[in-house]
Length: 156
Image 1 (tube, rainbow, N blue to C red):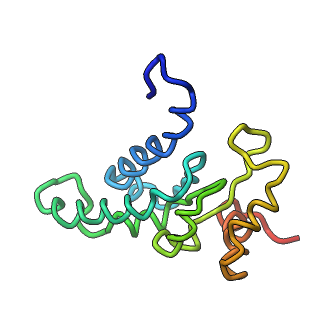
Image 2 (cartoon, rainbow, N blue to C red):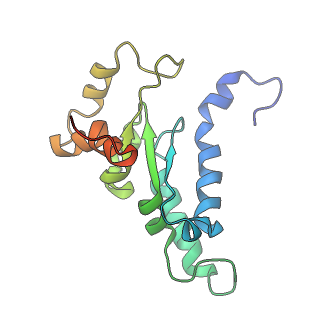
């Protein structure tokens, strides 16, 4: 949490750190193994941090699972992530550049209307600009199909 005299912008800029702590805790907690259908949408913190956390948790798991009795011995944290987590972003060029490290099937665009961090009322234009170099099939997943999958929204 930001110091009492820090502007709220400090907290806004560091929202991803809360998601990092929570995601890592859940990946190592055993909760995901006990609740195999549990799903998490990580919003308000972007996705650019995800490739590093997936790499770091796998490295930690590889080295330290041998002597810690509470760590799942058989399942990599990155595999658990790709089964239970969805990363959401508003504007995240870094995350989109590294989308394949996260998994195209695990990324969703968020708009957050009305919200101080949102891109509304220019959300469509900003999203189109952000994803102009991304193949159409990947964009379709990021802006619609993945949300339909997670929230079980059928096509009408």
